[in-house]
Image (cartoon, helix red, strand yellow):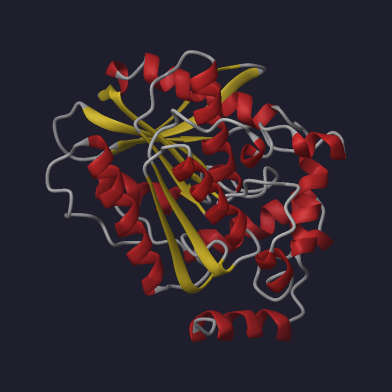
Length: 320
């Protein structure tokens, strides 16, 4: 279907203002620009409790933000990894999304502020994310959570990291995971897909931006074939937790997200793959209000509730 008219107007406005792409900026300027944009666009639902903490990591402390819903608990747990190409974004840029997931899924959400490139290149991010996931499992009681109902999730680069964490958990003896929430994930740095070619320019995330992110994240081009970078290249995907894979029609990452979902399915993993027509990359943390954002968050929350075995699985939050 055509690009959503609200997004068309927004993108045309950026083009008229000659807003520079991320690939034309240095990492610090890009971080400040994205943070300022998302800070004004987010709708932040109230949640029962929000706490910033620091936990032990592979190379120092990892900041986390813990969101707790109303109720008595113990609650299911979602460890969330923000997007931003492994280079930009932080706990604040995804605060609104995490609040909506907390309320809608009725779970404790632990958002992880993993180390960013280029200051900390691969494998800093996946190692931080796996370490944080283990920590959450080991400290579930302290978080008023249930370690037997533990999921991981993330958007874009965070979706990549969530997928990688499921592989590491399988290979390193846990923790057991009941679900993975993959929102327009990057899954294959070596891909040459139709969506990368069709959506290379003009839809917010560009192919030049993706190359900029990869060059900052990787130590060498050869690392693109490491399955901890490109989870699509892992030979065996069996035994991984059920997944919801959400993609966007006008996203260069669309095809590799859907192909990864199909590979999970072929390996015997229960998977739902949902493409949102007319949408662009990042539409769950949009620069403008979109009804499709509310619909997608509701779908995420319902999938999480079902995976957690929570009651009232159809009662989900629709706030962005």
